[in-house]
Image (cartoon, rainbow, N blue to C red):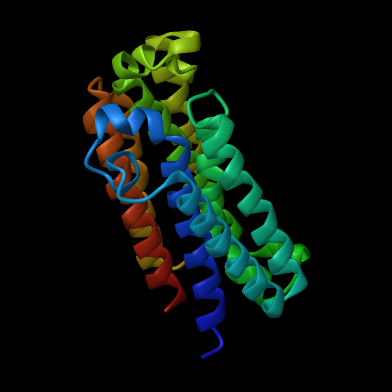
Amino acid sequence: NFWILPILAVFLISASGNVINDFFDFEIDKINRPDRPLPSGRISRKRTFIFYFILSSTGLIISLFISLNFFIFALFNSILIFLYSFKFKKTVLGNLVDSWLACSVFLAPVLILGDFSGLLNSKATILAIIAFFGNYGREILKDVEDMRGDKIEKARTLPIVVGKKKATIFGKIMIFIGSIFLFFPFKKLIYLIFAGICFLLCLYILTIRDVKIAQKLIKIVMFLVVFSFLIAII
């Protein structure tokens, strides 16, 4: 029963991110996804924003009852979620914010049970680091894949700013950095076997020229990484 409130808080704040994203994507969705509730007129922008506010506020209030550290963490992420949708989404900073939000899920349990100092010696922090670099690299490769559409929308993503080749190399470097941390958290043989497989897959990803295939393979690697952590803990 202890974990019900934290899970609910995370769910509500994450859901608020989807709602506020739809709010700011209103004009784009009128062209690309006119059948969605907001652009189709089934729900007004005003009601959408109110719904976002209710979800976010409820999640933050619940987090306050869990612990002060968790509330600070949740408040910080809630602000980032808003700024991501409002300003950062189609900029160079967008993938950094998105990757932080993705990896922070693994940090949340540490703050629920302890304080920020606990992050320094936690295996969850290593998992978060792997998730951050893996997701960051994948998002950059995804932006390389989406360059044509992003140019039409006048986005300022990394591939558009520095070019396709440099962005692809940088994205793959981020993936490689993340893969190095695979060998840090556990010394169990079963974990090291899975870590070795993930590391070899990451090296293989570095050789793939098709960014669409590469970023899909990263998803598989991230699933294997989380699975290997669970095996090591059990």
